[in-house]
Length: 332
Image: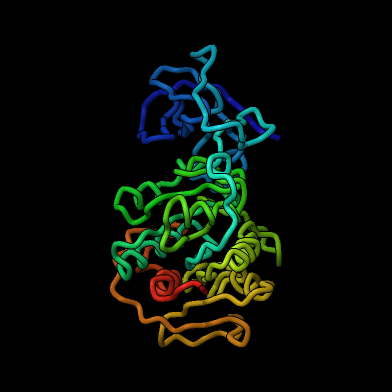
């Protein structure tokens, strides 16, 4: 069950479109999704959802501001009649691209990199930008982890540097430059509305994992691969590999990637850093496993608190997918 508490905003730590971070009296911290409840100010009494912090989950110690008690009402115009966060007290009329663009069927004709972790998106984007300057990479955020795109410091930085050309939020995820109902139309919106030369798909910050064979959020990669293939794109799986993760199931080739490759009904493209051995779990007899020579890439990103110097293999394998996407073409 959720936990709630009241507190007073003591300090405004930072803000950007869609997000404020605040300090609370008593020492707690919280973030405010301003597109859902409006902004807060120092001195405001607020209701915060404390559930994730109470459970010790991976929010980094942040509560979530649920409502500002200083106002009687708040509202902002939405983008249409389609709702996200449906049937919750925070359902919001974001509108979707499908309302405006009509029929989005037809081939997308671009390579699509499918990621397991949000942090891989930054590595893929940096590698793609380094090897395909001037080409447009668009990020499609799925709803298997964090739902608000505004929460991503990574994406905010990539947009500021011009590494990502646009964003699309799919399913119940929200806050992208474009909103989409599902993975199929999100890919079509990325390719046609956002004019992507390549697309990177992955979850938002945080990820769900249970340590079981199939109990992890990024298994939705199977649906993404299916959508990419049926829409005439070229699916590239960004391999999750680590030499530093303390969990055996993620050491070396992560069981997440191995499971996706084993269960995919379609052959996919898989990049591996040239010179490294190809593990059997990549299933080179089924998938297109391609060696990639990595150019020098500046990576200002971390994953689970680890930097490139802490876990170089994680960053090499993810970067290889970005480089491969710059060198291949979708069928047709």
